[in-house]
Length: 216
Image (cartoon, rainbow, N blue to C red; front, side, top):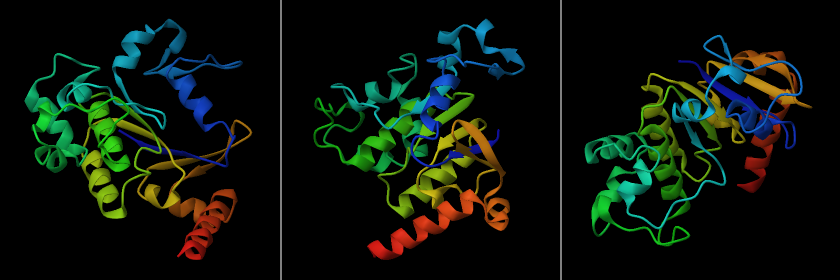
């Protein structure tokens, strides 16, 4: 049930690590273990069914909202889809759509905002009640209020959460933050611990703070 963030500068290996965790790449050295079992001895299709993912390049399909939420687990009921929508903070938006869950999303997500798309992708990821959630900057298009609401709802889920974070202000409540550089973990701790150390993570946080103040 840990909430872990993976951070670092562009090109440090964050996305590669996610591909390794999902079995889309194999490690050159060492091994990946799930519940003490070497990943090479695990059926990858079965593993991926237990992992909910929201990636930056994720897409919605030209289907109704219900089908988009339950596409990875078609056995899920309408109630299951609504439960996932509530967690993702998209339920009210769906109720406001012309046909609710039966509203068809046009190809290319036409008529859907960036924030709505991200929340629908989150609903899709949580709907099957996975044991692990992997998010790649899954709330980047959400305003701070909505991001906080979604984060609090996700906190209540009984699963491990791994997030690739670019907006560092969103990971203050993580149990653990891993700072990658050159494909290696060079800093490991809570948000407050890493800030107190004054290392690479603290430098990145300060740089983002100055950038946001400059933009304002």
